Image (cartoon, rainbow over all chains, first blue to last red; front, side):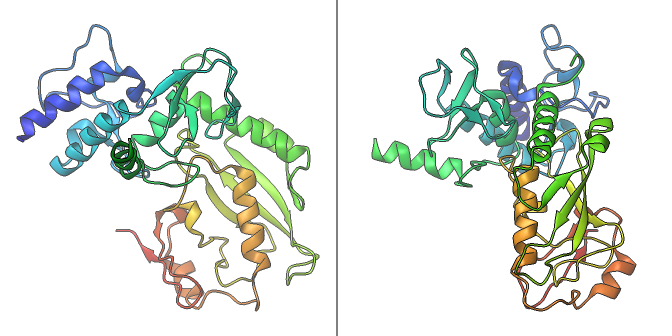
Length: 153
Length: 165
């Protein structure tokens, strides 16, 4: 896979899923040397110009500063997150609170379910999974657990 | 909360809830200066009492929490401050704490309460009051922010903080 393709991957995914971009607001730099085609500006005004990513939880980089290895890592994460089931809270589930924001689930909230069965607000967990593919509660690696769940089903 | 991204709103809600929980006295031996925290939600001072039956019984310590706008996705900066820095093999005399959940093992599911409990329990398990072996060198050379230290977490025997380059 060439780096140009990787750039395409990142761009397409970020324009598809706005939620992954939220919170990436602090670093804005010239996008002249960005990989891939220019960002689709009409629906995503300022933020798409130079989204920031976190190859690991404490590292913050604008998309133009990512190494090829980090781009692959992040593209894989985006792909994997999109395979995790989502739902809308209807008040019937046992889980009542999102431990990331410590807020109670309200009817109508968008949720995401991890393979370990821990449930979070979709915006909360997606923000974390873009930094680390582990469950915040049980620290289980989400990618390995997802593979296991495919094998057993 | 106009102008804030969802993750920032998430952090503010969590911090506010944290102040409320600690103000209610839900965690024994731990209380927050809620006036200070309400003035600035990103900077807290917490009073921590040494647990009864441990080497720190009767002592009171002050813990400082500093939050970035990425909390809880980014760990808070936690140090002991004030006149009484606990004498402990994982606590440097400048207040820096060698505890993995504060850097590498941080999880957004952790809260101020759970961090405080970890620190109380770290103090409580201490068998002999002493500073880390490399205290003098570390304190002289470290960054002001303990999160800039590359800590080695291979437990009790040899603590070796090394500076991130």
